[in-house]
Length: 587
Image (cartoon, rainbow, N blue to C red; front, side, top):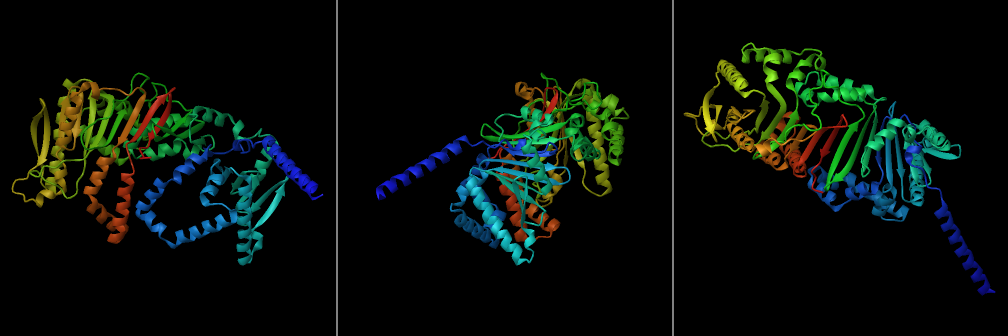
């Protein structure tokens, strides 16, 4: 009899397991989170497979980086971290698993974040384990009830049911969440939960996934994107659209020159899409929009290379910190100043007056700028100092501009005259303040004659030659169709050497209208050389003691050490703008 009872019991267990497996195999998977999200989401961020991000964040390498950061090391030794570890241990006990497994199962599925008009936020987590999610909910809800009782207001923690769905609040209705199998939905507005239930019940007909702008944006992104961004420009025209960009550029000519061409595409856009992916083991961020560049005859069309044109490759010189290559028609840019800068600032008026003086009354937009081609290059480079000239206590990198001339024979004399007048004005101003002036000279390098100006060192002691003015030895040089304007003679010589290799120097980047590159090693060196100056500046500006100032500067240096080669590209694809940032992290 006992044997028969045991056989029956075993058969029941097997049948139960088989039924459970059958149900699990035939369970209806949850639809994508976007099938439940209202279509008026203004900004969304999606991580389709968050396990990749979670594993990267939880890696030993990231932990070692945190330990090296002064702020990170302080936090790891703080009472707050000890308290957090206590909570982790408690959750490990209540969830019957270690924290690494819990994080992987709860955060390793997919993550969807959204912002709606009216400061409403939504987060949806698709976990790998409905059972573990239910356990976590029970622990959190139990703890919240206990805390509410301690505070004498148990109504802060409550639940409500709507169409068979149960939602919970832990803060008196300020936020709310619900569970749907292995999915957690959290929002700052309980009413949004009801909308999500209604949409799910209707099969997602009014969901974000069915919205045309969202579908277009998603289709434009690479399929291997780790993170996807969507911005509904029709909902955010005022806070994020062209008006905000235009306002920020009105008093910033350099900013307008660099990114002002994006105003028209943003005005015409209905969406902006973004992605994070890995290319050649480096994280790459891309932004694009359905807005298009203006027609070639539009006043703001000053940076529009066609598919075969584009800016030149960036300058390569020793000790390079930053290099920028642009395709900008300066004549058209300046002609559109009334559109870009509707209010003439005092700085712009002063600039126009100075240009009139330097170029002997020539009309700046009609007789000067038309001589320049659209290809412009900027380079910032650290200096090697000559002790005979001076080694400043505060070192400033050299900065140079390279302009492409259409008619060097006509324009070089104009530029040389303007350069000499500018130096004369500088000397006159310094003379009024009883400060030493610059002495002009002509030198030759690799067969190229150039102008240079320097401060006299006659009779100066070594200490006197450490003045900040010895960072500057301005030079003007012309090589072929290139005009070099540099704050240091050394950088001007380096550029002459670079430009002599025309095959390399005149290579183009088709479709690109801006390419910027940041070099870690050179930036790190100049920060280390100026370490003491940075510490003193931190103490003066922030009122910190020396220990605190050194800690913050050390943190800055460490962050720079973690950088690699950073590259930013703005390009024209299908007549629309695309921005690509390659982050050179040593992953």
